[in-house]
Amino acid sequence: MRLNDCHNVADFRQLAKSRLPSPIFNYIDGAADDERTKGRNSAAFDDCDLVPNVLAGVSDIDTKVRVMGKEIAMPLMLSPTALQRLFHWQGERAVAAVAQQFNTWFGISSLATVSIEEVGERIKTPKLFQLYIHKDKGLNASMIERCKAAKFDAIALTVDTIVSGNRERCLRSGFTSPPRFTPASVLSYAIHPSWALNYMFREKFSLPNLQTHVDAGTNVAVSVAEYFNTMLDTSMDWKMAEKVRSDWGGEFCLKGIMSVDDAKRAVDIGATAIMVSNHGGRQLDGSRSPFDQISEIADAVGGKIDIICDGGVQRGSHVLKALAAGATACSGGRLYLYALAAAGQPGVERIVGKLRDEIDRDMRLMGVKSVAQLNRSMLRYR
Ligand SMILES: Cc1cc2nc3c(=O)[nH]c(=O)nc-3n(C[C@H](O)[C@H](O)[C@H](O)COP(=O)(O)O)c2cc1C
Image (tube, rainbow, N blue to C red; front, side):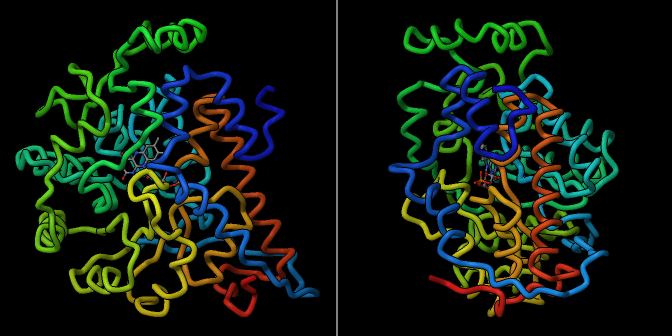
């Protein structure tokens, strides 16, 4: 299978699987416990059908939406994900370039492999920084200050990783950042020489937003679970979230909200957006899917805060369903990560283009001219 044979997220997943050492593929693809929530995140869309209206005169349609004060060209954003230069040597640079090309939000992780400053320089389109609250208060303050200086447009505080989820594929593979070559995993690196050569001879792997304060992840190999459980602050609460919002002072999103009560509290502390998310099923297995929660959250806080449906999105029709239920926009991680791992920037460009085209085509097939026309009368639950 080659790039031009990839027509959807599932095709890119297959190509990524063949190109990556298995510990790395399983880090991207895997989730917590029995991975029920990961499966449910996408399956939830199948429990709901679209009911189109026809003869709507759809020669000109408008796919734009406004999220956190910025107009973007399509209602699908690229979620922040860690360690991207491990998946392909072009890493965040490739994803940022594609986000700019399609004019949508791009997020970098606290555990990004390209610095806040470089991303700030590279793209003019809306960019957010995903913040993990560390025990090291100096590190938290430094990341917020760096985002201000680099003119980031928003901070998303992740609130669903108070402890690490139980990611059993990573336990089996011994995956760490930076990768540690163990007797069990060395063969899978050896049989993917192009990945191994890029890793060894391109720019040295690092986590530039953290390494000013911590060695773990850059110079000391740790699993992601160890990192979360030793570095992050388990005392994080609403007061702390509110303080981050006021220290930052700009557009502020809580990433990982699932309940109506928490969505209301997000409004109360002055957040401008929530990502309804279970971290792609990587944290609490058994959690409900984001799509299933959208209607009740939109009924409670719609119009007061932007609602981003994050996770499980694999098709343009999924985006339309979430928007019809009440979301402002959708976002996803694996949908572009498989493509990055499979083919670098051309891969990301191809999948984001395919999804943009699906959104455009499906809006016309639904008989809607603008995103605002999507509503619940167009949905039927099975
Ligand atoms: C490989 C990988 C790494 C991720 N790293 C982070 C991270 O560093 N911070 C964060 O808040 N979310 C992270 N996420 C979660 C994503 O931001 C997003 O919530 C999730 O991917 C959505 O589910 P989807 O992959 O089904 O689209 C990561 C997800 C994946 C797959």
